[in-house]
Length: 169
Image (tube, rainbow, N blue to C red; front, side, top):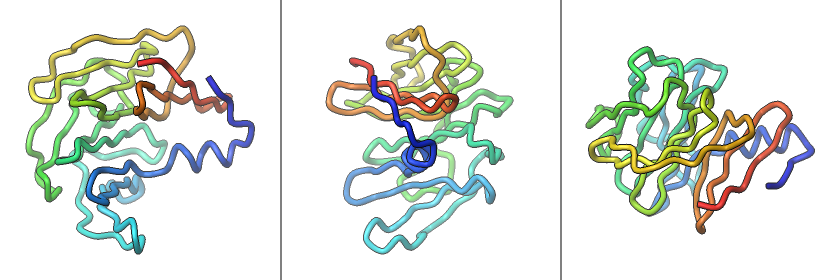
């Protein structure tokens, strides 16, 4: 576990868009309820598309990229779904049941979709094709706001007080 003392630094870190393969960058503009494909070289927004549900500006939304297609979740979605878009974005290609009623963070790691459920303080491992829960990590701390994975670690955040937790996968 490491702590970020500067709240601004944490908010910048948490608001960083998710990177994908082949220099693909996705970001979320909650004000417009829009998912944006962004050129990592120029910063220019390319091919924005509307999210399937209204993403509130409080930021209870998550994005992940499989290397082929983006995934989106909104913790306020009454359907409790995780949406997958086709490779070009825009059209919902597939949807999965969210493993909890308050999933607000997504990550993709080694062929598995990860979902952070902040009402249960759990990180779920999900089969991205059929939504089967493959396992979970239960945490004894409050987590809300963001999820990342890589190098055998999960990184989950809490917004108050601002902390990023590093968890062995």
